[in-house]
Structures are given as structure tokens and as C-alpha cells.
Length: 49
View 1 (tube, rainbow, N blue to C red):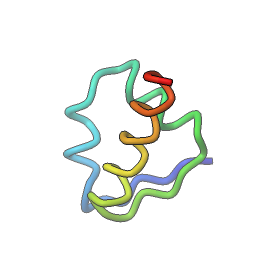
View 2 (cartoon, helix red, strand yellow):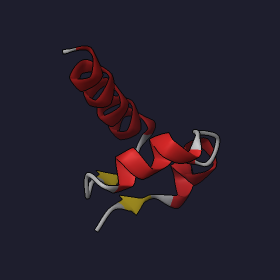
View 3 (cartoon, helix red, strand yellow):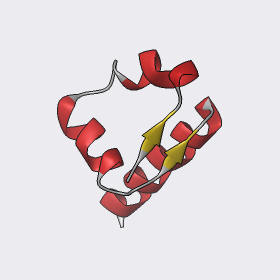
């Protein structure tokens, strides 16, 4: 189950519905903005390649 830390929850909520779902489906633990950025970069890389 994914976890989004309260410190970055407001940034996470600015993402689109579909993108949030893609992140949550990955069962990731997001504690910092760097964690969130890393997941977003992986999603982009997968979409491109």
C-alpha cells in the first residue's frame, strides 16, 4: 500500500487524478519531494520507452 507523507501531501494533490492513481498503484512510500520526483521520472521513462 502506498504512503504519502503529510509534508508532501499538498504537492501530491495538485497532480491529475490519473497521475495520482498511477503513483498509488505502484505501492510506493513517499516521504520527500525527491521521492515523488523519482516516481514521476520513472513513469515518464516508462511512457517514453
